[in-house]
Length: 109
Image (cartoon, rainbow, N blue to C red):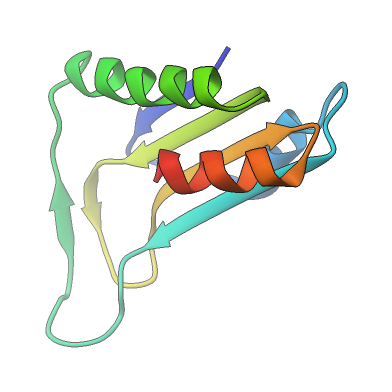
């Protein structure tokens, strides 16, 4: 079952990747989005509607699971005040084959 998390705190990419590495996994693909550190941006403040956001992200994850032969996938999106260099989003897909994992990750983000 896809893992969907919306949270203020940072995420541990190593722990998330390790969680996906189980069973018949031949490849895990991931993407980490960060706040850019250039220009005049000093901070971003991201808000969301609880439950609605999670539902929308789960719909995307369920679609990825239906399109590609994935063993699992994860979407973590941060909310609150974030500064340049902070992680914003983590998406990952695990599959027996790299092509499915890579394509699903592109779709998830």
